[in-house]
Image 1 (cartoon, rainbow, N blue to C red):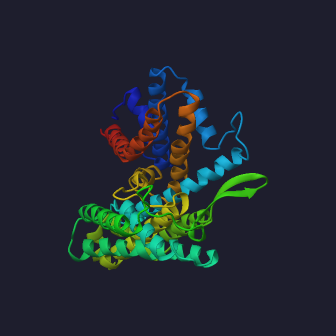
Image 2 (image 1 turned 90 degrees about the vertical axis):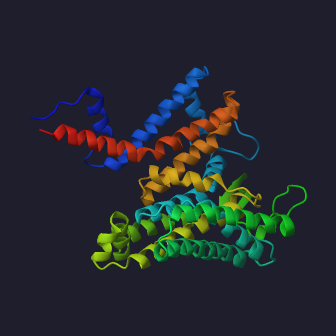
Image 3 (image 1 turned 180 degrees about the vertical axis):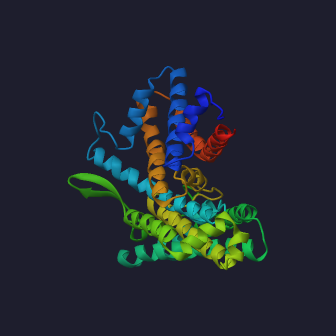
Length: 376
């Protein structure tokens, strides 16, 4: 005889329980809960949640505003959104690829700083022609990030060192070493950050005139889209992708089955590090133009929650990145339009990231409820 679950459990299992598209349903459930929690917060502040979320979409360029400043439009806002989303796409893919093989890569922020710094000093201050400098920046990001990724993978495999501990230490080491060189050789005496890179090496074109509008054009956004589909194909359609996932599920069984676990782990971290390197150069030589000493970009840590919200899939990570950056970029406009403190507006984005990170718990809880129902 089957146990009859209460109403709460039945609704919860419909949203997150086993079955078709469970991962997608869990992600949508997390988004719904975050929006609900944000609505409660706004109601406590005496604000209309629907109007607040509408303002967020307007600020991100998804919906039109009532009016715009000179040479600005909904299209320019949307292009700015794509510009700021590009580093997040690469960072989320980096975390997702590592998680597929059972590795928790929290060194994305450190890799971003390292690759951004190396690209800055090698190309950012040079007088190379843009047609040479820009592709070279991308290549340096891939190589620099890949080197750090290989180091993490090698230490994990060769000495069985916990990758989380290694990543934390590397974050500190990279942050302080890069800060030392910036403050002693490359500091801007006014901003106290690194000297801005030249326009020839920038991966974002600012105030670029198109149709009498001034737009932000991220030159590597098309590369981000291509990378999403390449990673999806690589994970789901290739032999190495199968081995990567097998190692993530059970490394001992994979080794018994003849899979070279060490090679798989190191190659996976090479890919993950290269993606984080792309995030670094698209961030520090794209949306930003300088590096702030002793500061790790929060984007690298946020990408963990974004990858989880996207179910560690390439396509999911792309849409999760877009959603999170819509909130991140749109809350500024919402804050000014509805007279909400910027900290409160940022809290709404943090709530979304929080619920994204606990999606795995919801799935596990729903699976447990389903097993209880099947008990005799």
